[in-house]
Amino acid sequence: MGALALLLAATVPMAGTCADGGGKIRFVVIDPGHFHAALVQKYPYGGDVSTDVRVYAPKGPELDAHLALVRSFNERAENPTRWNEIVYAGDDYLERAVEENRGARNVVAVLAGRNDRKAGYCLAAVRAGFHVMADKPLAIAPEAYAVIEEAMSVAREKNLVLMDLMTDRHEFLNVLQCELAHDRALFGEQVAGSADSPGIVRESVHHFFKLVNGSPLRRPAWYYDASCQGAAIVDITTHVVDDVRWTALPGARLSQGDVEVVSARRWPTPVTLADYSASTGCGEWTDGLRRGLDAAGVLQCDANGEFTYRQRGVFAKVRVEWRFRAQPGGGDESYALMRGTKAEVGIRTGTADGAVLFVRPAPGTDAAAAGSALEAALARLSGKWPGLAAAPYQGGWRVVVPSGLTITHEEQFREVAKTILGWVRSGQPPAERDNLLVKYRTIMDAYRMSERR
Image 1 (cartoon, helix red, strand yellow):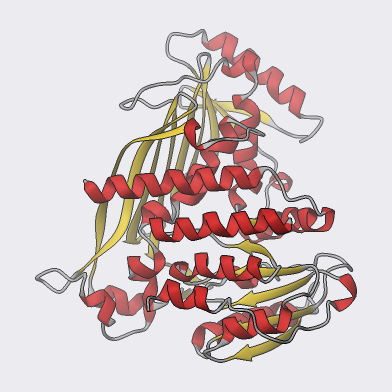
Image 2 (cartoon, rainbow, N blue to C red; image 1 turned 45 degrees about the vertical axis):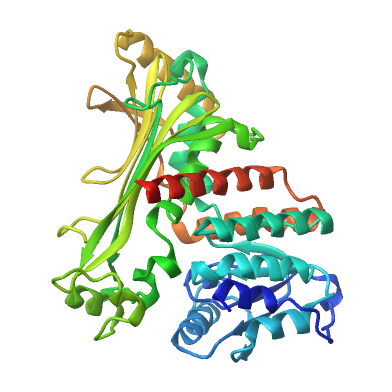
């Protein structure tokens, strides 16, 4: 029986439930193999969220790392949290999570770990009556997408929230780009573009080897295995495709017919055994990774992908690239461009100038008029975000953002969790779940097309 089938078999009804905690919202953390599971608990969420957190996982270093990180939040000197981790560690962790919590009200399953298990966990959780907040991606292959479709159908029937943690929506430069791209006096109309010259471009570059607090970030061995982690074209692009939709069409409710993939391709990142060992601490390849070695014994990691698609007539291109290590002084990078008939609005990060939101006149348009329109737009937005200003930058302008308007990546997890918890409290799951299915269907179409290529 395959791994996905085993996960689904674990949803067979079993006897026994636990009390519902007096109606409080309770987190149930399942198989926390990624530190994002702990980041959801870096901050408290109010008196109606129980500090008792049930954790179900197999024994091992990933569980130990999760508990250590949550413990550090409890023990920090400034604004410590008060989480009480109630842990079950064993091979039957999923069955126990379902058995001990089925029937309890306001349970929110927190999922962040191996991506090949995510779809099965989602289905098991909603069948048991849990809401779900999950790290991306929910599906890494077409068969897993079919499970997510079923899970969403169950969630609809039971009026449950099933959403992924889209932290980019709380990145201030993304929010500001969306605002400026919908100021018609400044931006004009969105350029549809073509497959060769898209109207929207979003790209990102990441690195396997990173230093955190001066020490290498330890990646689990499965992180390099596309059958577990997923190819980049189905992983990081979850964020990127989501960014394209909500910045271009905020508030829109898409259907499958609104999106069509035009082209897609993937290519590998070479990883030597020495590199792999420095990143994971493992001295030899796993059996699964050996299948990806070339004749020289170098892993050809399925870590890069790009695709072009039409979204309601507008061409968009997304690209994700993974390198092993950044150049000295460098780091992760990203680029996001929206082309309007009057101006272009873009974001660059990872540059010598830091993170930059820039505006430049569209080709053939009047620069003075664009500058005046930008000043007017920033004046309009100053009531919401005081201190925004414009400065000359590479043939256009850079928007100067006061530091108090931005939040850290870890704080973004708090904000997206608060949004999801708000839906749980209201008992009204969002229309966003339609867009979630369109997003993953788009990514799966690109995955299939890149396989054929």
